[in-house]
Image (cartoon, rainbow, N blue to C red; front, side, top):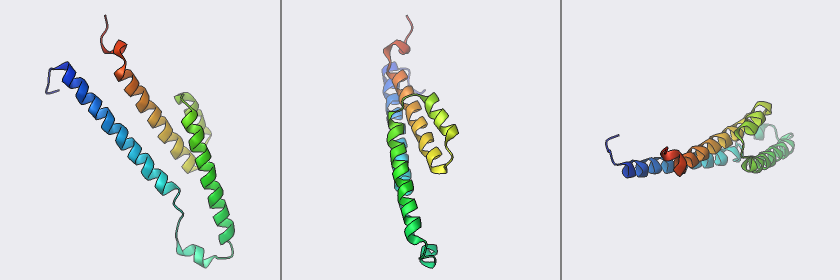
Length: 122
């Protein structure tokens, strides 16, 4: 707001959008690294009898989340993602879907801002 030069304002807005996009990507990477990191707790040592079964279930859950993540990348409609969000039961699934919705909305906003038709009416 400190400058009246429209070209400079566009550059500033573009830089802000880029920083927001980078921050969103860093957040998603951090979530992914936390999401797929196996838990290391003393309770597994106490319950060695069930450990192979819980390990298998954890691996299955990780594979299911990875498949869901790939499926979400192919979806480009916020309404469709919202329907999936409402139908999802697991916390991790909902978290992935919400991240996909945020990413899609950020892309839509960036696309609108870059569109020359939306910049100035005739």
